[in-house]
Image 1 (cartoon, helix red, strand yellow):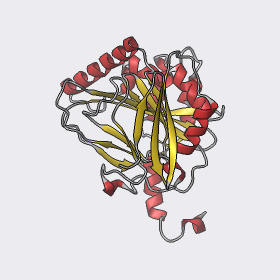
Image 2: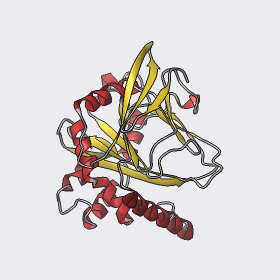
Image 3: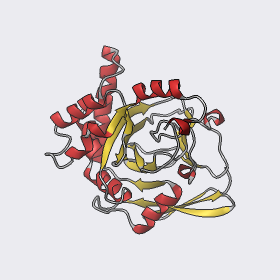
Length: 296
């Protein structure tokens, strides 16, 4: 990978990466106060590059509670052989969907417009973990525009240390409209202008435009390190979004268990903002003949 330089300072990290023949500077910040929101410089950087890194966002004690919940979830799934055990059953994980500091920053990126929670994934990865080739996660059937914003929040509770699952990103690629797996065949290879994130402090988060191309490069491991990873995602109101099949159930559990924080964030769990992607996809495949514009 060419043109990638990382230099560490006390509270600021800069990464220079080569993109279309020019040098772009990306800022990493270590949060000393949880209430710090995004600066205009960070908002501009997100618009240009499609991601932001917030080092050490979670306090160690909070991160440990979340990891404990993830360990319980993993043990329960192995014991019951239930791979569909719902994350919302685990309170430390469930409350991440409405974590106030994250919601506030996402609101800034959404320019103050309403948005809803889309989904959450959690996994703890060890030696031998498979990678995930280049893709993006923007929910749209078919992929035709980027009229509304969707963001993912990647959470690394033990950080990244280069042993398991480096994160690859292609800054600026969120502006290109393409199929989610258009570059899937490139695997985990470096692309022109891509960057590799293999060093993050424990408790760090990365906020990404959901349309940015990214990948997880498998690494051999070899130590005691586990990649405790959670991602949540949020969709800007104003259009209907393709939702997971069980979204109504997930939202109901979230409200019943108080993840809306005494109704302060009840709007995050609004099922009416989604359509059933499985049903629509089947219908689309039947109609996807010739020019779709003529079928409008």
